[in-house]
Amino acid sequence: MSSSGAGNGGEVPTVLVRDKGSRDLLCFLEQLIPLDGVDYALLTPVDTPVCLFRLKDGDEPELIDAISDSEPILSVADVVLQEHDLTLVRSAVTLTVSGELDEPDPDELEEDGEEEDDSETYELLVSFLVEEQEYGLYIPLDPFFVVARMNDGAAELVEGEEFDRIQPRIEAELEERELSN
Image (cartoon, rainbow, N blue to C red; front, side, top):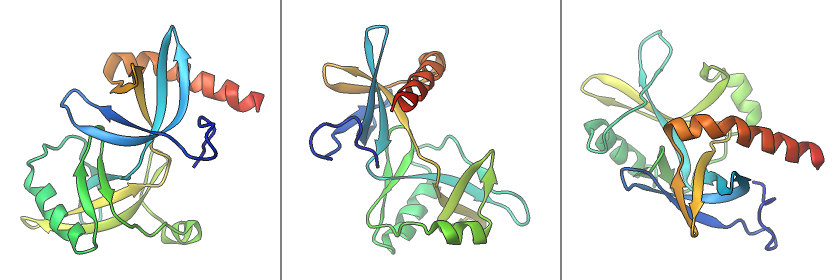
């Protein structure tokens, strides 16, 4: 993990980002990017982000984007993860898993032919059945970034139109910083 934004001996600072539903996500502060007098933060979750997929025989797994916190699928996922000493966290932005996870071996991933979806690669963490339907929690192997607006030390999740508007500018700023290094 990069500590380029932190000048305190390799320690990466953490911030708590909150979404409109008042759910929190503890993140590492990777970069601060000032745009139009506003500080935007590029963050990565402290806990491991996971994505929920519906698994179908012979078909590509189907990503489930929106799920309510009280969904029975998540209760079953809680129980399955507890068997592995892991905890499912209903965080802002994404579901996360806390606990000790084995780091994926990049060589094994290439051999296994993991799920490909628009160049995103996932590793299956656990699979389980709910009402005769199989589901899986997958770990995205590409870096998972969160963008937040910093206000008096508090991080507010950037979503919707504001995200669409500033994302290209943040990417351009990051590319410029990369080139100047």
